[in-house]
Length: 194
Image 1 (cartoon, rainbow, N blue to C red):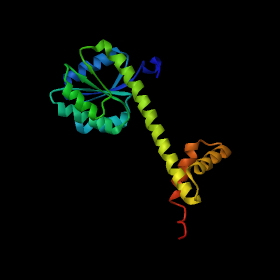
Image 2: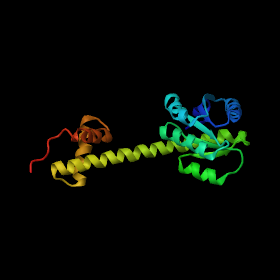
Image 3: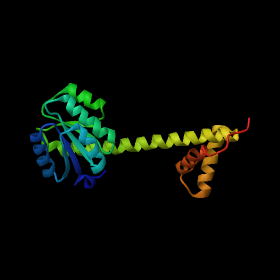
Image 4: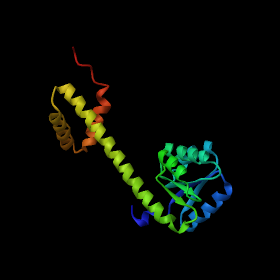
């Protein structure tokens, strides 16, 4: 992700303290980003995340660590953006718990000049994470398709892979598209006679 792509981000901010939301919103705006939502309630943040699809979310540690952790969980559950925990002072226990719940980084709200660098790094890592997740998903689909072909044609793994590859080439499709078609249509095929 280039610097150009992180020049104007859509940012969701969440904190149980409305005074902290206002301060964070000012800092985010000063960095040239747009605050698309300010959330206090855990019950609302998941829906807002799904609807607004922010580029990044900043979750502040307010009075209650549990409240902040619940905000993190709701945003991460929607899986639309990376989450950064904002803390006012070092709190290793909170950071440890937040990382277990899916936070990509933490920054202190007293070092606002460093926020943009942290956001840039988080966005790069989130993109890499999504790329890896996609690669693992594509690999899983391909493996399932090979298994189906091996069972249907009584062939070994290299032969099943070659069938997929040859069909992809002859139809000018990506291998994963062919594999997906095999997996998707498998349930429609008749059972092998005993």
